[in-house]
Length: 351
Ligand code: GGG
Image (tube, rainbow, N blue to C red; front, side):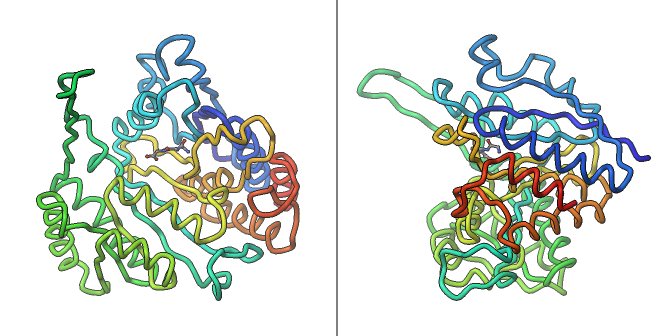
């Protein structure tokens, strides 16, 4: 029996509803493949913040360091400013553990209707590789003359050669295992220093991968192409902000953000990686028991891949795909009436 120590952070809002279904499914696949998961729960999030003034304890990162992986739900809740909740939990984890790749698959599954005409299951299948440690998400900047007419805010973008190269290399290596096509998201016409630098690094990196086709688009027309020609893409690499925006758009194009998974990866495995749905805490539906658990469950499959359990990962993917294909229970975001728990139970039973 293989043992895995997993840190579980349900977080806020629907995170608390979808994570238990993710664990239910991982337990089910664990029984099938003789995997022993030891779950350690951390009640960190906005509630902890309102009680203690911190999203996680001062030694939170040290507490997480020894785990094989981190399984996270969602962060953010009304009453706590979003930049406090994000910079108090999610971003410190991504940075301290050098999770510099945020891998976000975009796949149209059988049984789900795309809002776009003429797209069938399998016809849209690409991965967004989002830079996850620098870029537009920086702590460099400041504010002056607060509460006066002269008030100002400055935020610096950080693009390093090391940061660009490592995420681009990951994108090319991923493409080599897929259809050998990498698209870069840029905006080097308007963003005059960092984006031309990003383009230079992309041009340098593609020399090392002559077997891969490449192209690059400014982010505005790339967003349009996601809607008009989503079948064009294989691997799309983008900066922190561009990758984040594109992955919500990608999720919408394949039917629902409720099914979009993600992996925050430290490819060198020096630190634990973290697996979480693309969606946030969705306060508008939190507490109603109707959140779609598939994004969380699919993120669990990505965790299994990272833990070198690809067969178990495929079984999880087949289980939720079969529920969707056979018109099994589905939550309201996919036009159904089922609860979060009913969907989780059906997927676990399919395993
Ligand atoms: N599933 C984690 C979560 O709550 N994500 C919401 C969010 O806004 N994340 C910001 C980001 O990924 O940059």
